Amino acid sequence: MKITGIIAALTLGAAEVSGHYIFQQFGVGSQKFAVYEHIRKNSNQNSPVTSLSDTNLRCNVGGASGASTTVANVKAGDSFTFYLDQAVYHQGPISLYMSKAPGSVKSYDGSGDWFKIYDWGPSFSGGSSSWPMRNSYQYNIPKCIPNGEYLLRIQSLGIHNPGSTPQFYISCAQINVTGGGNTSPSPTVKIPGAFKASDPGYTANIYNNFKSYVIPGPSVFSC
Image 1 (cartoon, helix red, strand yellow):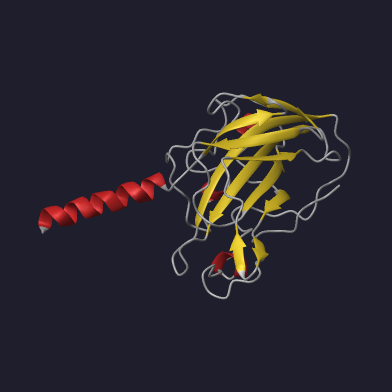
Image 2: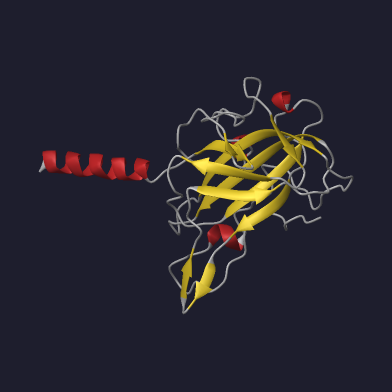
C-alpha cells in the first residue's frame, strides 16, 4: 500500500510538471531565433508565477534583468512569434504587452508603464468553449508606437482549476523598434497591479455555465 501510494504520488507529480510550459523562443518575420536568444531566461524552469503582488509577474522569476540578453531589431508593423517548449496545456487567455524602456532595455526592470497589444480568448459554440492552446503565437508590432527599446511580454493565464490560484506563464523578449510613429499608447497599467483577484476573468469557472469571458487586464491598444 505504501509503495503504491508513493508511485501514485510520483506519477501525479510528473503529470503536473509535464503540464507546465515556457515561452522560450522568439522570432521576427520568418526568422526563428535560438532558445532564449532575445528572451530573458527565467530561473524557475517551466513553473508558473501565482502571486498578484509579485514583481516576477513582469518577466518571470529571474527575469528582472536583461543584462545578458541580446536585443532583437523589429520594424514597427512587422510580425513576431513566441514559441513554447510544448503547446499551452492549461485553459485560459494569452495576452501580449509592451513597455518602453527609459534607456537601454537590458537594464530595464519593467517597473514603468505597460500597454496591451493583443488578446487570445475563448470561442463559444453550441454551449461549449474552446481555447487557442498552441505551441506558438504570432502578432505584429503596432505601426504607430515610438521608436525605441521595449520589453515585449507574453502571458498565459491558466484558469484550469476553479477555486485554486490561477497560474501565470510569462516571458519577455527584448526588442528595438524602428520605423515607428509618435502615438503614445493607452491605456497603460503597472505590473503588478494590472490584475486583481476580483477580476471576473481571474475567478471564472470554465466548467460551470461558462458562456462568456472577460480577459483580465486593460483594454487592447490599437493604432
